[in-house]
Length: 296
Image (tube, rainbow, N blue to C red; front, side, top):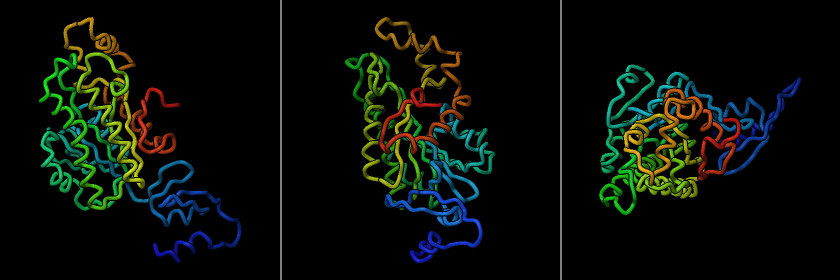
């Protein structure tokens, strides 16, 4: 919108009762008082603490949509009328029939292939409301002194550096991204024995998010620990033999089939609601555990 028209939208007076005026955030950190009519002319805006979008539907890009949290979120957003752009190694056939779902096969262990895959996935998009960097691997579980360097490198590649390839392509191409949420873990801060490369990679992911928040101030970033969700990672942990060195594994296994460890489909609405509130609760770049969020 031209500056003159934008100014007109904010200053124009109407006859009769005046519409309510709200203080809203504009690009560059500026704030203005504006009527709902003026806000509508702006397209996407923050209004009364909520993210608004005047387009017909919002768009979310999710990595790792074939199973687990990524699959649960993809299904939930589709049910809410969002357009979902998904990528993973395996095609989620149950989602592919939805006209609002676009999928591109991609292996995050091969970062050199990511730019072409993300380009194909986002073809025609100029704006993405939400990017969920969800794909991740557990790696070998056990004492760090026993971990193989190759396994540690692979865990870091998938859990951290593949996300860099995704974000770099989006931002370098001029994509307008409202929000980025990286799925982190309590393991990033707990320091429980046995979590080895996974804990290190998630701690690195938290700092990765903090640094990108400084570089991309127009986008809200957050590293979000989703709590215990019954995913393939939990299945692997439950299959481990009992070992008194790794107390956290037994504690996690005890929560299987309880409300403390919901399925991805059951967890998705709660996680989506939490992500919607992040920009109003925390500064960009922060780490948040969903279990400690008020009202979630």
